[in-house]
Amino acid sequence: MRAWWPRALPYVVGLAGVGLVTALIAAVRPLAALPNLSFAYLLLVLFLSAIWGWRPAVATALLAFSAYDWFLVQPYGTLYISAPRDGLDLVLLLAAALLGARLVSTLARQRRGAEAEAIESGIVNEVAVAALREPEGDEALRLLCRHAVEAGGLQAIALMAGEGEEAKVVAGDALSAADLRQARWAAARGMDLGARLEGGELHLMRIYSPRREPRLVTLSGGVAVFWLRDEGPPGPEQCHLLAALLAVGGLLLDRRRGAAAVERARALEASDRLKTAVLSSVSHELKTPIASLRAGLSMLAMPEAGLAPEHCEMVAGLDRQTSRLDHLVSDLLTMARLEAEVSLERSPQQLEEMLGSALRSLGPLLDGVDLRLELPPDLPPLMVDELQVERVLTNLLENAVEWTPAGGRVTVGAERQDPRLAVWVENQGPPIAEEELERVFSKFWTRRKGGSGLGLAISRRIVEAHGGTIRAENRPGGPRFTCQLPLEAAVPVAEPSPGG
Image (tube, rainbow, N blue to C red; front, side, top):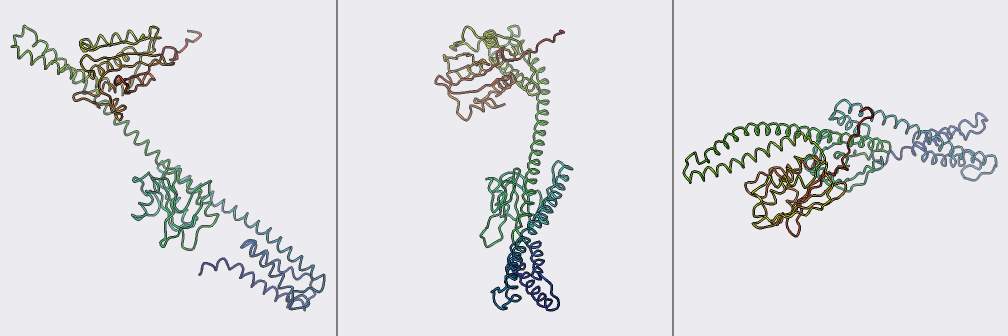
């Protein structure tokens, strides 16, 4: 059947109906003197308007007006009307036909719209109920694809989840390699091809291609790929249903992506917990033999041991390496504890006192370094954990000294920046590459050979646990590390209860 035949059928029925009604009126009128036989056409017009709408009904009404005047009104064979009464009948026939066609067409359209809405609500509700049964929503997605083909008027449909090259078909029909590449390309760029979902409506665009091209609509959690049927695009009600199904499909794909992200986060969290536990266990197991080794080396380094000078030098070297290993194990243990849980014992502390403790702990490491302090005289107290912040200052100073050339300068400064205090340590070492300014705070990453890569990572973890920030930047005088710590007034303190 040709494509034009469904559109021409209402008009053919109207033409045949007008001929049949005209013949019946011509046959009945000589036998019985019935008035207003012309209104028999009205039943035909109302029938056409209820089935096919007002356009074929209006055309049939005009044709009935002409046929009645030509065949049944004197003088016959012309459109001339001799009797005023016959003219009034014809005008009333045309007016009633046009008005009735419009009214019945409107009522039929509203009825069809209500039925379509009921069908759409039932289908969407069925998909939603299926989605509630399982977190992944696989059954709901398959049900959605089936309804899109059966009720939505599509030839085939496939739903893809993911982004870019990772997008894959999770429901619907399989895709060829070419269609899969095209869908992934569209998903990576968020582009629609041949269709667009906008304002709750599905808009289909004409595609000029020798082959049957798929339509692609990007959704919040993936992309929908579908093909239209050979007999033509879906009707308005079907497009509205498809828009609702694609909207629900986008939500299901987005929920699927969220569930996958949660699962990955849980796996990473479990992996981190396992890593932290193993790291903590290994660090504890290493502390005892290292302590015994250092004690033995200390005894060998004593004069009473009677070692030769070259052996004493070897023992001293071993002691230095053991001390370095002890420091590394301590950093590993500290990082494991910080990643497991940071428990802060906050109290008002003066920066000058904590800085003094950090400088004393470094001791001989500061020899040959020009250390300058640029601290305002009226610094307010900090509300911090004293031991933890001392570790941060020690790590920053140790890092600055290691990168400062012999005789170079290390500057420690502070500035009030309510509600925090900015503390910085600057050295005259080589600048840090721009791409490494953030990486220097990563675990086990270091710019020098032999470093543990934990000092700055520990410092960031402690500062962030206090609600502060730490960053690295290149200044004209050299690299500067700045951390911001909360002032005493910036940390809320629980007020005692009236009864306490």
